[in-house]
Image 1 (cartoon, one colour):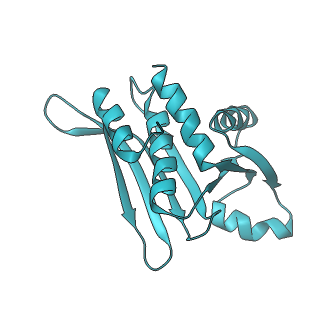
Image 2: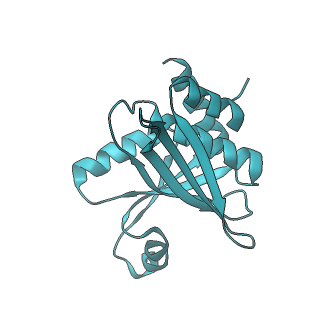
Length: 166
């Protein structure tokens, strides 16, 4: 049985985490923010991770940006965020392909990002650099780096397998 959003939220709760999706946008553009938090002893919420993105009503319309995980005991936070993102795309949008940019700031960090994204099923598509024809995409993505694409169903399967092993 494949993960769905409800099951992913249950997986988060079983780990003492709260996973929520915040949706917005107007017209055909939908914005997405996936957050994972932990409730502290004083009942306040500590944000552990988030991912932001947007979707257009197309098979290749999911664009992901700003993935961040912070704090202690966060080994499953990233996987839960990715699983929820892929599940949402498959359940609530026509998107079947996700795109992201592995930013090229520091060469060593860029290499880590590319390896991490490949484990989630993202495959390199093209470099965005300083060429004039890269400018429109750089404006959208906010920098230079490696543009990568993933199949949402395969990404969800990989997250599911890794979460079940823990």
